[in-house]
Image (cartoon, rainbow, N blue to C red; front, side):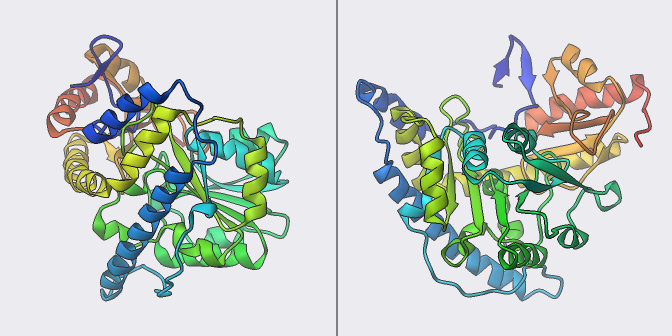
Amino acid sequence: MKEIYGRILDFSANINFRGMPESVRQAAEQAVRWSEHYPDTDYRTLRAALARRENRLSAQEQALRRTAGSGAAADTGPDTGRTDEICPEQIICGNGAAELMFALTAAYRPRRALLAVPSFFEYEQALRAFGCAVQHFYLPEALDYRLDESFVNEIGEETDCVILGNPNNPTGQLIGGRLLEQIVSRCREREILLVLDESFCDFLSAQDRGRTFTGAREIPANRHLFVMRSFTKIYAMPGLRFGYGICGDPALLKKMRTVLQPWNVSVPAQAAAECAAADTAYASETAQINQKNREQMARWMQDAGYRVFPSNTNFLMFRGPEGLKEFCLKKGFLIRDCSNFPGLGKGFYRICIRSEAENASLMQALAEAGGQLKNVEVS
């Protein structure tokens, strides 16, 4: 078991429990020898590797969507059959997706942004840092905090930026293909920048990938879309940090590069990311294991009386008794208290999905907590 702070097992950070692939680790370690030189600020070989990765994944996604589209209950949206490819010039690299979020906001300077909440805190932090007014669209608990078509009507004339996570953090919910098509079309028609944060999309099962689509397929024909991706979670690289953005607007990318600090991605991080870009098998294997472990953990928690919300990624959001975080910490487990997310409150928590054995050990503590702590109603 990977531990932090002595004997505390961390379920609060949504990092791949399998750890960093050995090939990626070796690439980073070998690159330390080259670190007496400055990093390549153009990321030439890295951006080429990322473009190949995106185009390979897009081809796989189209096949999955065609398969899902044959089902009667499919929610894939239309299959455009688009064959345009991502090129390296449409990719920008950063020290994690959060850095790119701040650089994007600094370069674009939106005046009024629409956020579906609860969502990743750094979206609003970046927007407010540059004087942007933020409009909240509160995801309803009655829909398990899933985005629905009413969101499209909230994209108003004064909106000049929309930010969505797909899957969303902390809810874990996916945006269905048909709805995502509507949002993309609305933003494009009104020339609104749509930011899709896909930092957790590599954890999607093949079935779930067929129910939505990644924004990269729209980039070649849509200048009003910015897609964020991250290797921090899926390849367990939080200490190295690496994220990248994909955008079809060369002027926006140029402006972002002027606000980013030079040499923002280190030599070891670039080497690790280039190696990771070629290893899509590790991501797909993780997604299969994650789905099995997540569904098992959700059943355990529901049987113990917890309100568990549906998730498509490597974490679960749930409701439980107040004081659960402190109880679990005493038992040796760190979980995420979600009470500070807009749209949530006391009694909301999030846990990362880990190995079956680690999940079972946490479950013992959760079951014990259910018998000792009093549930609190959350409005």
